[in-house]
Image 1: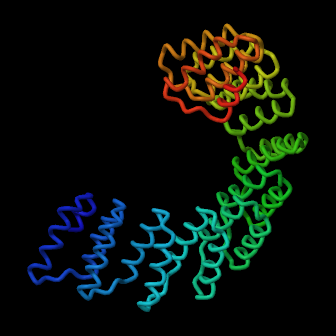
Image 2 (image 1 turned 180 degrees about the horizontal axis):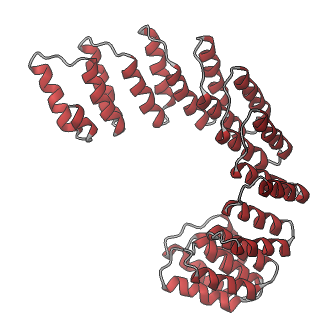
Image 3 (image 1 turned 180 degrees about the vertical axis):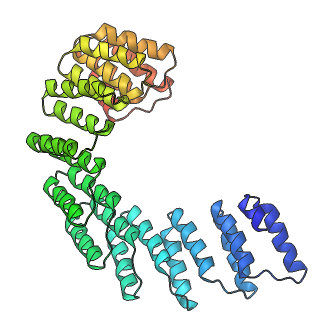
Length: 389
C-alpha cells in the first residue's frame, strides 16, 4: 500500500486498504496515515475528510503524524479556518501542536497578510515552551517587511539573537534586500557590519544588494567604495554586480560610466545576460543614442542571447520615443507576422506612439485588433481608447 501511495496510485491503495477491514485485519493508524498522505499529495480534501471520519468511527485515534499531514495539506490549500479547527481538535484530543505545526500555521498566516494572527501563534508557541527555529523567524520578518512594519522586524531580529539563533548569509541578504529596496540603506549597512561582527563573510550578493541600495539613494561615492573594497579582498564581480552598476549609473544620469562598466564587463569575459542587454538598450534609447542601441541589438542577436518580450518592448518604445515610428512599425509587424507572443503592453506602446504623431487611423486599427488577438485591455488601453475618439 505504501508503494502504491508513493506512486500516486491512490485508487489501488484504497482497494487494498478496504480489503484489510474486510478480512478482520483492521487498518491501524499507520495505514490511515499512508493513505491520508497520498490524498494530501493530490489535494483530495473530500477523500481526506471521509477517511478521518472513518478513522474515528473505527476507534483509531489520530496521532501527531496524522495531524501533521492534515495541517500541512490544508495550509498548502490556504484553508485557514480548517487549519485552526484542526489545531482545536488536536488539543481536545490531548495532543499539543508541535513546533513544526506552529511553523506551518505561522507561514500560512504570513502568506495571506494576517500578521497579527501570526504573532499570536508565535507568542502561544513561546508560552508552550516550544523553540522557534530560524525558518519561523525568517517567515515572520519577511511578512512584516511586506507590510512595512519595520519596528517589528527589529524586535524579531533582537529576539532571535537573544535566543542564540544566529542567521546565515542568506537570511541577512534577504533582509538587506528588503531594506535597500525601501531606501533604508544605512540600516542595511548596519546589518552588513553585524554580519562581520558575528564572524560571517559578506558574499557577492551582499555587496550587490548594498550597491543597489546606494544607487537608489544616489550615493555614488559609497558605490565606488564598496566596489573597490570588493575587488581588494579578491571577490570577483559577477553578472549581477555589473547589471546593478549599469542600471544604477543609467538611472543616475551617468551614461558614460554605465557604458564604461558594460565595456569592462565584456573585457573581463563576464557574459552579459538578457537583463544586461535590456538595461543598456533602455539607457541608450532614453538618451537618444538610437544608432548605438540598434547596433547593440544586432550584437545581442549574434551572441545568441534569447531576446524576450521585454527587449522588444524596450526597442519599440525607444524607436517611438526617438521619432523612428516607421522603423518601430516594421519591427512590430514583423513580430506579428512571426506570431511572436506579444503582450498588451506592446500594443499600448504602439497605439500611444501612433496617437502622439497624429496617426489616429492606424492607432484605431490596432485598438480594434486587440480583442481579436485574445488580449484583455488594461487601464492604459482604456485610456488610449478614450484619447482615440
